[in-house]
Structures are given as structure tokens and as C-alpha cells.
Image (cartoon, rainbow, N blue to C red; front, side, top):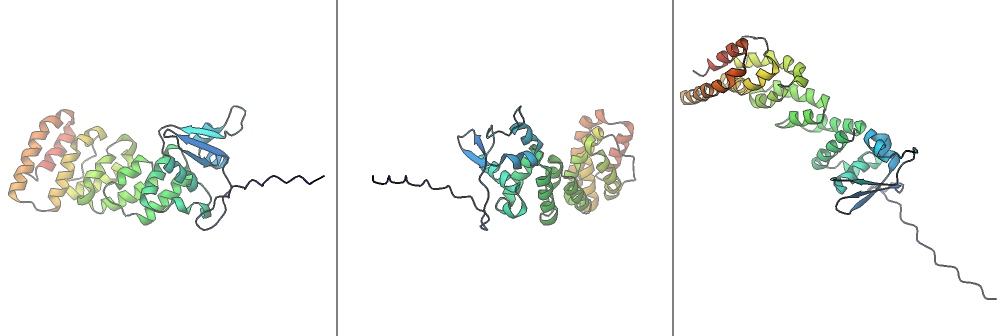
Length: 258
């Protein structure tokens, strides 16, 4: 009896590799997106790194799902996010440029991936100079160490950064504003007044910023007249919300313009 021919072997899918040649185990999770695209990932890595993903992936029986749909999300950004959660030697392809870091910090904040968030904050502190927008970015994503770095740099150059420091005129950043307030009064050339309530300080901030700039650089009479006119026009709108103490402080800032 003739021997039966063996069926052709089915090729085994290649195991993914990093750019350095390290083999990465194939994923057990398929994540789909609104545009119909899908990304293969690792449920255990996501669940361990993110309590939000842990809740999304865990079934009532305690097992991990093998499929997940992320509405409104970007497949490319998720791919970078899932790669960035891998051990150090396997994640470098996701950490190559500032655009990717910017997207990753959003994902880390939204999905509470604290270890990745710390990694990104370390990069910002070490490699990205403080500039306009840095404090707003740190406040948006609760990057406390980056926020402290921004405050130190901005207080050292108040004329450049005073307007952005107005972002601290909120209840949640009251402590930071109290720390900065004496330096602001000094830079504006006014006595150290008690800091007004944050609601009033937010209303006053354009005058505080202008007072600091005016004191730092001697302006022309034309500029002084323009600032004085603009300030007097705005006082009518602001004065209704200011306490008696704050109004006195505002008068001191304005005295430099008249």
C-alpha cells in the first residue's frame, strides 16, 4: 500500500522583534478602533500597568478579555502606548521623539499608568527646557516634579513668564502661588501686601503682570499713557469683584503707569 503523503506544514507566524532584534511574545489581546483598524497587545501588561485597563479587561469571572474596542482612540497612539509599557529593553521604539512623548503622557494620565508617567516626567525634567506652555502642560497632567521645575525657572525670569504664572491663581495651586507671591511684589516694586483671595487675584492678574513688566523696563511716556488708559478702562469691570485690600494693591500697581 503506497504511503500517504504528509500534508504541507503550516508556517508558524514570525515572532515580533524589536529594532534591536529582541523577540517579543505574540499578544493575546486584539484591540479594535473606530476606523476598523486593530492592534495586537498583551492583556497582562496593560492590566498590571493601568488600573483603568485592568477594569476594562477583567471579566466578571476574573479572566482577562481577548478583545477590546477603544472608541475615539488612535490605533497608532495605542500601539506606542502599549510598547512603552514593556520592560526597558523592549520599549525604545515608542520613545523616539517629542510628538510621541506628548501623546504618551496623555494616555498615561487618562489610563493612570503611573510608572510610564514617571518615565515621561523624568525625560521632561532632564531633556526639555522650560518654556511658554511648560507650566500649563505640567498642570494639565499633574506632573508635580515638572511643575516645581517650571516654577523655579519662571520665578528666575518673571518678566518672561509672569503671565503664565497666572495659571496658579486657582484653589488647587494656592500653596504654590503663596510661595511665589513675595517675589511677585518685589518684582513689581510694591510693598509685600497680603495675597488676595485667589478669585480676586485671577481678576487682577493682567495688572500684576503689566506692573512687573513696567517696573523691569523703563517704558516711554507714550507706552505709559497707553497702559494707564487701558488699566483705567478695565478697572471699572474689575473693581466690583475686588475687596478693599485688593483695590489698594491694584492702585499701587497702577501708580507706576500714571
